[in-house]
Length: 497
Image 1 (cartoon, rainbow, N blue to C red):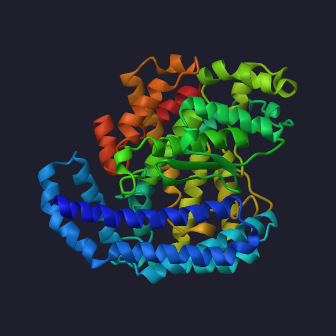
Image 2 (cartoon, one colour):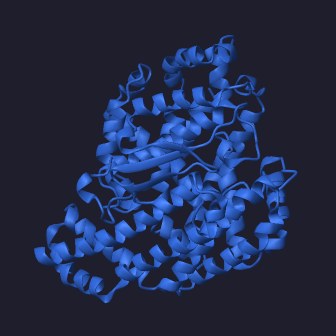
């Protein structure tokens, strides 16, 4: 069994290395690659995607997994090798259904579509993206159809990101959350809005970057195993457990974008940097789901980074970096500014109270696109109509409307957005558990100390990597199933105060 297990690990290592090499090319395209490199880059990424997929779905992989099944069961659910075999088996059963050529074509199309999107969004040009989006929609449906028997065409795509979730379960969760969220939002909006003008002054980029990197280093992001670069749409990417990179963007006349994007992506990266190093180059060396991953970025960005205790410590330091911009601004004013509740057009800039409504809009629209009940020609207007009905505002252009998020223009349509709200819900749930174990955490944050929180997260969330499914992880950490109540209690406690 040990010989077969070693053979499986060697095979999986090759697959991981091919996928990580492709990720390097994707990172380069999003940061430094000249626009003219897009056609070749798409071809290169398609080749690596096909080679990795073919290597993984080779019948030899299936035979090894079959031979090791009884061995895994004998080891028990918490054994690392058993977890690896379980995870590899689940991935294999999904992957053998997908033709390598389909993945290669989708990868090449995604690279070309992403490059076109970077230019089309700046030019407010939905017409250019319309035929590319039609091709993306076709690929998304073909990918879903590799899994016949689904209840909804989006189910396989949702399951890729958040295993075990389906359209019906996400809709039920969103309906339950929305029923509580909307009345709470209305109650908050009855109060006078916070003055956030202090955030819209001139903030030099190099000073923004230096302050943000100082903060995330103190939080626990390891720059010896990572780096930060600029991009159009911030993201985290991992090439190995020793190379976990983040990207951000800066606006010279708005402080919030660069600062909170940096903390957000560092939350993703600390998750991956905290995975057990023995999982390197295996399917366990990743976050377990989109929702759990997002729980960490939202926990550090919002629960910690937008908390009063955090700024009790850091605000004087921020003022010293920007004395002309913030020297006359009281801490209370700044704290209210970074937590201002006001419906807005851009999801990534949305406040905590309205953020999930942005996610629900996108989720509903992509399901309608997949179902065929919404035509691509009608998508921009449908987007505006939903924003008007849900948030009371509508974009005048597509740049801040249907073109604002990269997801549909660099991947598939379906499965990408529900994880953001799942992450919000889990961020409050996990933070509550951390406080139960260590009530001293808020006081420590107020002194700029994050070791206890980071250590608890590393041991309970990060170290297992993808060893457990999201549902299993929640059960292990909290002793029960996922619930929205801690998240709602957190929002009520913060925004009704």
